[in-house]
Image 1 (cartoon, protein in one colour):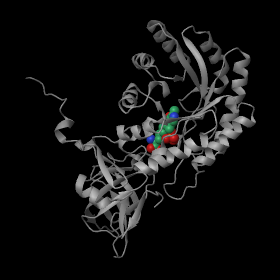
Image 2 (tube, rainbow, N blue to C red; image 1 turned 120 degrees about the horizontal axis):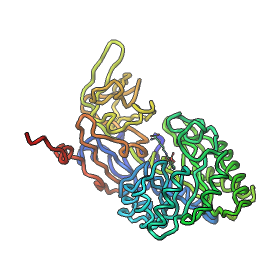
Image 3 (spheres, helix red, strand yellow; image 1 turned 45 degrees about the horizontal axis):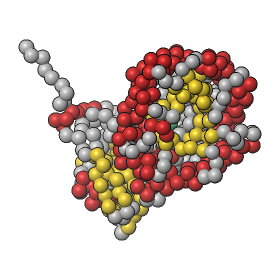
Image 4 (cartoon, rainbow, N blue to C red; image 1 turned 90 degrees about the horizontal axis):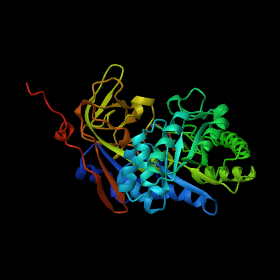
Length: 420
Ligand code: LLP
């Protein structure tokens, strides 16, 4: 296992001090389980490396927006990065503060901007000229000035999966690098906008530092030009994207990543600027597992299938990105392992969670799908009218249900049939 808060004692997987088997018995499966200490450890790695620097951490809410998870970070002093009014509401409900929140996203609506402006968010990360105009209009109507950073597309290759690479010219995100200076000039001239920063986000599950250094260099070149044009750039937001170990990836550790970037900014003579980070996956990914029970074993001529009670609606990443998640038994068996495809009950061939996995399992056994804390529950759906899983947070010896399992009747509670 790559997750330190998840380890075996007497051949039973434990989450901190609690047996995963007892969690499955108590709360049922499929079940997302998070470790508070793993969340805390990852956050502290960022915070410790930022200490003594003008640096801020904004947790990317999209990676895991459970209130208990957000609250752990809020208590540690985190800021947040949101992409919708819904995420803003979650941050506030979890004890986060609007003034420590940045609002990203390529398609913010005027209504969302209004809400965020009234709540008092720290910065709008704007991605296009039309969005600047909309925000300026919204701010004018509200009698306010909106703090703005422009998301610039630095056109660097983050060397990750195409679906989660965002900093290339061909992506929909950000203002094209070549247009950035002129866009800043436009923003600077808008009376209800206050240009305060620059940002980028080059992709996700990035396992090397060099694409970040390239992106920072391009951003800082631009900052020098923008300031020569009269606008002031107080912060540089390098986005999120640091990868984690799912299998055999070897991303830089969080401290090394942060220290290298901060040193680079300083070396370039920009040490006076605030540096923002927007991590998601690297904070929560390895702080969570998805527990599932084997329903049936189905031997076949070409493949053996282990059919489990979790599915692509619970964890979409394998179906969507062919993502690899380690799958381990909750209780180790001495029996001979066989090779299985671990699949769910949804009626799609794409409904798989792991392929060609060596497992010694029997029907009724529990499996843990590892590294499921990021983009797991948040991307789950009700496809096949499957209620979404429950979520539990473990804190030392205690486990607390932090989201109830959905019930089928909730799923169509808002629907109605025609009267005649
Ligand atoms: N900031 C912005 C503007 C973003 O778009 C993202 C993620 C982040 C921060 C956080 O990135 P992270 O540190 O988590 O890599 N569903 C995909 C990942 C999509 C990432 C989208 N943007 C997956 O399951 O791999």
